Length: 322
Image 1 (tube, one colour):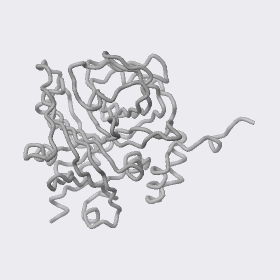
Image 2 (cartoon, rainbow, N blue to C red):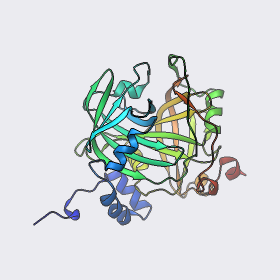
Image 3 (tube, rainbow, N blue to C red):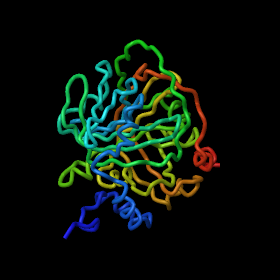
Image 4 (cartoon, rainbow, N blue to C red):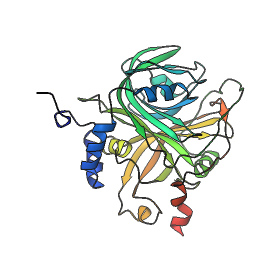
């Protein structure tokens, strides 16, 4: 007898399943996830990755702390030799924890996002081969994401000097805080060590978007609303099992990157902050452990662009507190 979908293991680990249960979406998420999440890339995704000038990436360092960053290159720097692999050429001048973590066998999460069309596709896997010029990722999970909350932008390539040496920090300065408070998007990496099921555990990286002011800064702590999404709960499900996060805030005006790693706490729908925030179904809190400031890390620039329709239906902390 041929195996049925019910005979196959769930594409979601225990943390994701628990978040789905809390949201009342467990059965629906499982049904959709089994159909959407594949151990290979469809041709449409393979072509999509090959036309992008950057990929958001997440990886865990040797101490198990997740980091998010952006891998950049001219369109074609990511190519797919077959549906189960993606090869990525690396800029050897870039120095960040994600690049440092890329080694054979390492878990890696990738997000391809095309800002001028709001298309995005996810790819989680393990590094099959790695060298000084790039690496090849073996696909564990490939799936599409909806265009919600993505800021519309046109990226303009620029000639830049080599990236500056990373500037480490353990406290958010006023400049860092201002960038975060003005941001309308960032990327978050999360990580569950792949103990027994590497095909559904490992590293994930996701996009978060909202109106400027949707991230609240209190000293070294950030509070972020969680809006309606695809009900996979990849990020928050990882937080339940391993409450650590890596954040990347790109500065589109200067080409710099703000990277941070730290602890994460899930806030349910009854939390007083969440109840007062328009569009938030729940939230989460990030506390900085350490970070890096990378000047001139991005080879393109962009203006503020336009809001996604869903973004305009959400609030900001100033309104919530009022």
